[in-house]
Image 1: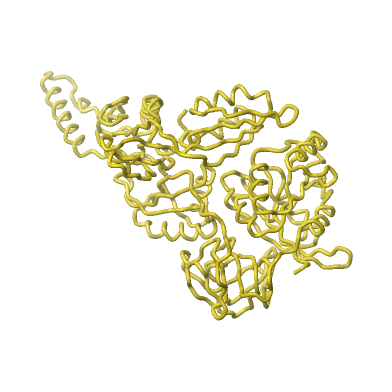
Image 2 (image 1 turned 120 degrees about the vertical axis):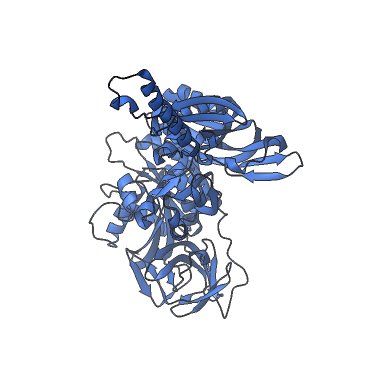
Amino acid sequence: MDNIRNFCIIAHIDHGKSTLADRMLEYTKTIKITENQMLDDMDLERERGITIKSHAIQMEYSLDGKQYLLNLIDTPGHVDFSYEVSRSIAACEGALLVVDATQGVQAQTISNLYMAIDHDLEIIPVINKIDMPNAMPDEVEDEIVDLIGCDPQDIIRASGKTGEGVPEILKAVVERIPAPKGDPKAPLQMLIFDSLFNSFRGIIVLGKVVNGSIKQGDKVKFVQTDMEYTADEVGVLKMDLEPRKQLSTGEVGYIISGIKDATEVKVGDTITHVDNPCDHAIEGFQEVKPMVFAGVYPIDPTEYENLRSSLEKLQLNDASLTFQPESSQALGFGFRCGFLGLLHMEIVQERLDREFNMEVITTVPNVSYKVFTKQGEELEVHNPSGLPDPTEIDHIEEPYIRATIITSANYIGPIIKLCLDKRGELIDQQYVSGNRVELHFMLPLGEIVIDFYDKLKSISKGYASFDYHIDSYRPSKLAKLDILLNGEPVDALSTLTHQDNAVTLGRNMCLKLKELIPRQQFDIAIQAAIGAKIVARETVKQVRKDVLAKCYGGDVSRKRKLLEKQKKGKKRMKQIGNVQVPQKAFLAVLKLD
């Protein structure tokens, strides 16, 4: 056990975590060099150049004639995947804090660092990308010293591209990070930190053995669900799964026991032996709190059950996704899904399409509100159709976040204006070093869900970094904005928004829908309503057939007769006419300015 080291890599997006991990795997001869980002094995990760999943892998390393087992977990950097990071941190004793020499300390670096410090991890600071022509290692070194108060000589300078500094990092991992603590003779306790679905072998559970050991063929049970299984195969995680006879205390590995039902495995659960169970579960992770809710509906209603099983399999691999069934008048049966942010929502939609061939419609994303009725009840409302009658509502509270934005001083003005336009309040601003400023804002979560991050990036030419956490709920004046097509409300397009913005939003939505809804044989009235009051209207004009084409001359009464006949037909059609809303219309509403 003294020769095992479990550590993860934490950093802001694009600071070179995965490339540095590649160099370590290469140096320890775990892999032969074939291509970059070996651990990002999903097509989506390769295409976008981001890490979406945490990846665990074992390396063998020798120092001063002793062999060490290093378990490395590479983590995502984007704020939407911070739950992945928190689970990786719970399975480790130390962390490499990687900072880009060209960018310096950014918002996500700080928030991931605090998460690691809360778990008492040993931090090894690394400055990456020192081979870049615009690197500023000395300034970045000062920033890191200010941030964590370490000695400048403790900071390792490295380059994921050239491999410089990698031997020093591996040596520091062995020397500075403590070996896992645990009692090999105690009853088995194994913490589940991830799981995968394999269509041939069932669910593969990844975990860290905290106490005791587990052998192939042992009878085990999951503490939370109280289900019992046989460990058909146990092993460690190299580039592929490598079977072993047993996993002992402090090791990170996997168990396959032929579990077919996705609901039986919960991340954060503890595995123990059936004959000699442990007396309590390990303190796992906090329950994940979704920030953004959206309805996901199959395009073909008969695919409802397939969508359910696809979401369950995806949830195994992405524990931060939550879902529950719901129905809509316009879209039929589907699920109300909770996501950690907009990028997370986009990735889930992509993965449903690629991994499970599920084509889905996603409704306008929104956040959860607390509604207090005049009878003193408190309701949690995730979508506008769940709102009680306006006469029964006493007040509504919406979630506020505390946002940290780190940017260069040149962009302070436009960024403060953007946040104030989104009903934010500036709490304070501090100069971190030289030209860099840290701004703290209180912002309503509902205002930042849709396009805040994109606007922030474009205003600051990509230099501002953004991180947030939920702070509290505050009373707010909210209005439900309904979109009516020919007098029928389309619940998939209705939104909850602040009263000051409702009229403008309604007007913009009507104009956008007018462009996107195809013309029919009858006029389509697109209206935006707040309660019973119509605040905006646009009309999609009908397509007319020229019924007068066959009249060449003759009395005007013949023409009038044909026009009257057409008019009656149009009227009858309008009564039974059904407006088709294309998928583009649901998505375009997200991109309204």
